[in-house]
Image 1 (cartoon, rainbow, N blue to C red):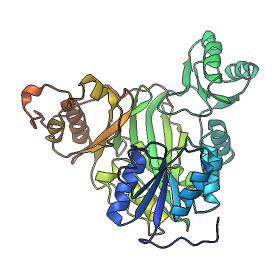
Image 2 (image 1 turned 90 degrees about the horizontal axis):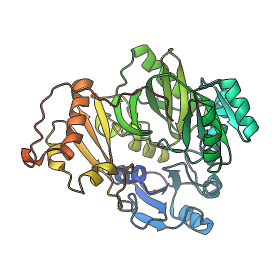
Image 3 (image 1 turned 90 degrees about the vertical axis):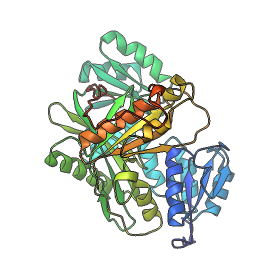
Image 4 (image 1 turned 180 degrees about the vertical axis):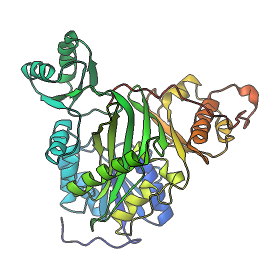
Length: 412
């Protein structure tokens, strides 16, 4: 790192590598706190660039632009993992980067990540690295079927993986995925009870604050709902929080670390994956915690004290995917959704709509988690529901609703 000392808050500029919705929400919180931001992203119309103070339009592989970006900033973070860690390291040679480029390099490769966690004694589903077809045969023999085959890189939102049920699936899935990644990994098929996650914050002095464990429900490999707090026993919630905190401590994280976990039907709590950034499952913190995950990251970057992470109210976050816009031909009834009590709308203002793309989210708060869930589902349904109700009339009542999305199959 250069000898130049970063200026102190609020007279500094936070650099954000990546212009997606996470960068946008970080930049919005920065505006509220009086912190300047500069975004590096190749898309002139990117979500974060619309609200940041500066937007350097350049490729993520442009080394010269990366150096210019570093020169415009005092401290840097990133909002997604699928970037060249060596480019981030070049920025890091000029400015502090949190979390570090070395952590980024570890987590963006599933095999390196799993082996690193295994070396730290972290509980994981059984796995075997797969490079050749011989590796694949041996891994299947060792782990048995069913099993899950994943790419080591470029996998997110359920992409880059396949469930193997029969021996015949092994070769076809190996051929299909091997061409997309330098390595694969075969994992034990976990019979799931629930999926959980914990967002941990750790500052430059080693002080930590973890948010309460939340429950995540996925559909087609994409996060659909986050329930806060998770519907587990207090002891299990505390164990999940403690496990996530121990990982952040052992890895020496400075910044945010989201730890995604499996709660197996046999009672095991297993780490699935790490994300060294704000996380989709932490969006509820904007509306249900004294300090959002985005403000918390800014506090760390600006060397301010960590904020309070407790839940002030039960909350449910519901993702809004491009499928909604496509099915409604763009005619979503936001007034009807916002007529549901306790619901807030967050849109990312992305240009270009397609199925599976995260376009925004709803967050519903209520005195009970059951009511918050009912409100979130009712508000999302109202977006494409009957227009005969009239603008702004959702027809909602606080009646408990159960979601069919609570599935238990293995996923990433």
